[in-house]
Amino acid sequence: MKHLLIGALGLACIAAAPQTANAKLKVFACFPEWQALVQELGGPAVEVFTAVGPLVNPDHVTVTPELLASLKSADLLICTGGGFEDEWLPSALDRVQNPKLAEGQPGRFFASDFVKTLEDDHHDGEKKEEGHLHEGGNPHIQGDPYRVRAIAGQLGKRMIELDQSDAATYSENTKTFVKDIGALAKELEKKAEPLKGVNIVAQHEHSVYLLSWLQIHSAAIVEPEVGVPPGPGDLARIIELIPADNVKFVLHAAYEDPRPSKYVTDRADVALVKVPFTVGGTEGGGPTFADFYRDSVERLLDGLAGRDRP
Image (cartoon, rainbow, N blue to C red):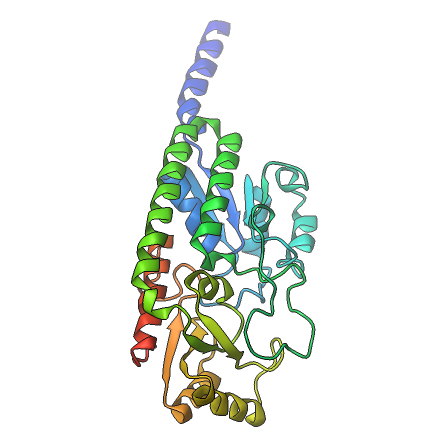
């Protein structure tokens, strides 16, 4: 009987071994850009939960039971950092008490720790009267392929540290991503050459990194203050500024209500362009970072040509 019991236990262990070896790295991503990056580096080796989708304002994350459950079981947390998630993430982490995601642990990864961020006020017009929305600088770093490339290199190392069983997958995918995104950036810079030095107006300071990368000037922001809808006087000021500064088009993020910008473009007779803002924000802007950057550049070029891109 004793030998039978030992044999049964041995068979059970053998049966369970493949499942353990093939267990996916569970990742909690705060935003779609980090979900996309993890999936590109991890492929089938990862399972990713995302706090908000690409059509949701990233400043407003709702903490749901599903979000907490995913945070509780995660092996890796990847967020922007720099204070961007401070309104909801610290309290959510306190509630779930996942030791893998504690401060100083390898399971805690903040992208902004590995790149320099830009200030919130990054347009050529007047500064906003109120304080910055993001004390750690503008957090929307996904708009710059070079910053994303740097983050990818660090994230790949972290994933290898956390999951040695799939180290070869992470290593190979990271090398490929870093190489390909650098080549794509150069390709798109050449394609976007006509945009260099052009003046545009943005509804909000969501595309600072994209504009900086392509050397496009933001002449003004439609929102007079952070998160405050523009009034009639604000819209009139923008409409007057467009011909004076030779503004070519107005852009808004996919998650934004475009009505303030459309009001301006209808009266100023310039194009209105929706940009994906993050991976998956438009039909052609995902599921990869390459899709995101290609679609963004194509939409900006259409705006320069006077074509609306809803």
